[in-house]
Length: 241
Image 1 (cartoon, helix red, strand yellow):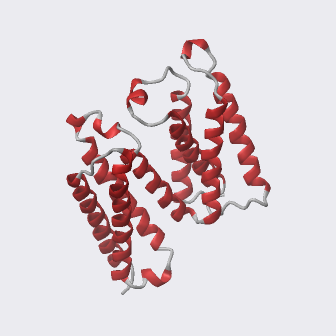
Image 2 (cartoon, rainbow, N blue to C red):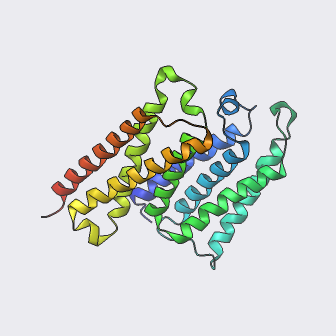
Image 3 (cartoon, helix red, strand yellow):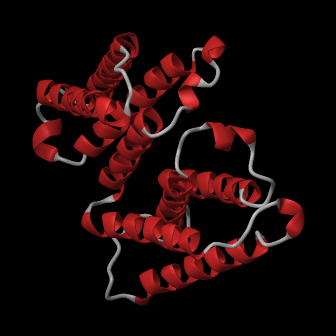
């Protein structure tokens, strides 16, 4: 069977992501993880959320999760087995780690949440949600962006994350014929989704003892606008008028 572009992309990302998280869970806890400010359990949930999302999309790239079919339960069983092995291997003394039932529960919570999401919405809608969760988590649940201020990580993250979110939103909106036929609405709604996400992140910041950074907010808006405009003109050039 010939693999289509999206399927190839998912397989490549999974082939990189899975070994990376395996390696990270089987070395002594990096200082970066300790300094990130993110809860260990939150990391477990997010790591397995992404793993389950990629695994399903690699196996069934064009289908929603159907809980009445064997495929989803086979994947749940496979992730559960991997999660147990992952925890048991961490009992190796040289790693300075220990197996934890709560960590395993967090792993499965993340995996099941991803599969539930994929049972409710299609690939692009699910990917848009994953991107939004990632942006919110990095912005408000960790200190990663402030660890190396000399590299301007917060500004680079804002530009890349919101630009990427807008591009995914455009792909998602592209599945809706009524919006695609109206180019002005297509542009407006893609920007609106990015602005809405930015407002949610900024509004939630004080709840996590963060101060909104208005320069980064402006960078996020600029990236969203640029992504939407470039996509809009490409859309205009490649679609018949």
